[in-house]
Structure formats: structure tokens, C-alpha cells
Image 1 (tube, rainbow, N blue to C red):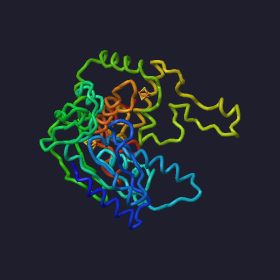
Image 2: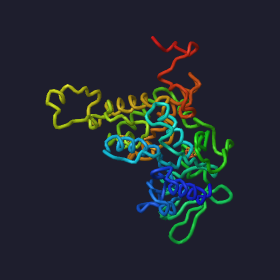
Image 3: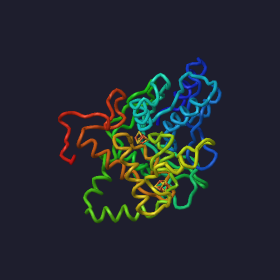
Length: 344
Ligand code: SF4
Ligand code: SF4
């Protein structure tokens, strides 16, 4: 794993020199195993910065939230924000740049390579530990995962406990970073991209339909998947009427006139509609950070849906989201040679 002291030193330097107003990184959490996001505003605070396989969250989400906060703040420090970014986080930042949601000079990216492997999936980890409570997780020199827990430690094959997105990751390092920590590792020992989607695509249409019916039936429409997604930055979302802005001056007629594409009731058909519309809105934008799937309280395999569209975009349009901030986004661009036989 990348030496965390190097990242701390750079973060400290950026803060001491006043080049950034804060550094957004990870520190040890107070609840559970996972590292938690932290805004560090003083050089001293950077001593708490950590980087290990529990830094699973996509910090790009906080750029979106910070942007909203700054918009409404009367006075605020306009210096850039330093941000620690893994490969998938940095691709999300690139999409935000592509969509002009943020400007490049608003961020200083401290990019970290996942040269050791990636991030753990706590569900897999808990299953493998069979009741032991993990207190620390790190890669050992063999590339396995060493877990400390009460009463000792256990070593597990990384393949068994890494997040699915990490097992399929094709670029485990940031392409756009002001400072890069670690190596750009291209060869990874796990599996090719789209392994899960390719296997799923082999099943029959009826099986796929039954699979999603069963999952959408269980969705409680808590919207956690939307809330955690850095790409879902709209103040109001067409598929989430809870996000409709109602102010003191909003009249009853205005409220009644709001178009509700999807009912609030969490029925299978409404849930299916929610997920389909959301997947379409993420086509060519989702960078597969896997956060939607991680936070889902009922374990709906949302990555499968989003990576299926990612694979379509790659095969049909040779497009991969998050690689180049200067590239026109998939949905807003058209080339003469693009396939269009699906348009009727
Ligand atoms: S998906 Fe890739 S870049 Fe993101 S945490 Fe996993 S290995 Fe790192
Ligand atoms: S997080 Fe899971 S349960 Fe909640 S809305 Fe998304 S898919 Fe449904």
C-alpha cells in the first residue's frame, strides 16, 4: 500500500502553504471498521490521515455537497479543496469536470494508486471471519489481506474479500492527479473487466427478468443509492419526489402540478421504474465506484445494472466514462459512424 506518511506530508504542506482551504481524506472511524471521510483544515490534523483497504468511500461525493454548501454560504474561503482520490474517485471527479459541475482549479487531487489491490467488501469480510470482529485490515507483502481481530489475526486471500468493483478494476490508479502516490499498475491478478456482467448476459431473458423482479421486489426505496452517488447531483430528482423543493411561497397548485413520474409506494413496478430511469441517467457517467451497491441495506446488486450499461457504451461507442475531462460526454455527442440501427 502507498506509504501514508507521504500523503500526510503533502497534505500538511498544502495546508501550511495556504494553497488549499482544507484537505478531504480519510481518518479512522469511530463506529465500525471502515475509515471515515474527514475535512482537515490544519496541518496538525493531517497526522490522523489514513490510507488502507477500509477507505472505501468515494470522496468525490463531498465535492458535490461542498459545492452546494459554498453556493449558499454568504462568505466562504474560495481556495481549492485538496482531495485524496483513488482511481475510481478520480474518474468521478473527471465526470464532474466534463459536466462543468466543478472546475479543475477548484480541486487539488492527491491521487492514490490501489497498487496493493483495492478496498475490502465488509460483507465478504464478515462472512470470512465467521463472527470475529475485525479491528484492522491491511495488505501483507504477499498481496493477501491480514485482519487483526480480538484474540489474534487472520490472513485471507485478497480475491475472497475485495470489493467486486476492485476485482474487476481496469485502472486502479488516478489518471488526473496533481500528486500521484504509488505506481500505475496495469496488470492485476484478479479478473477481466465485466466478468459479472458477461456471466449474467449468458442467462436467458426470462431468467434475467425473474432475477431483477425478485430484487426490485425487495427494494424499500430508501434512496441511499441515489444519495451516495456523486453523479446524482441534481437538487431535484425526477424519480425521487422527496427531493422536490417546497418553500414557504410554494402554492398548493404548484405542488399539485409537479410531475411525479414514479409513485412513492415501494412496489415492484415502481421500483423497477426508479432503477431503470436512474440507470439510464448514469449511462456513460457511472465510473463504477460501487458505492450504491455497498450502501444498499437489502443488498441489491446495483453494480450489475450500471456496469451493463457501461459495457454497452464501450461496445457500441468505444466510450469509457471518467477518462478525459476534455472528451464530450457520451449522451451529448454524436459521430457520423455511431451505430443507430436501434433508433426507430
Ligand atoms: S475500483 Fe479500482 S480504483 Fe477504485 S478502489 Fe477498487 S481498485 Fe481502487
Ligand atoms: S439503496 Fe437499495 S433499498 Fe435503497 S433505494 Fe437503492 S436499491 Fe432500493
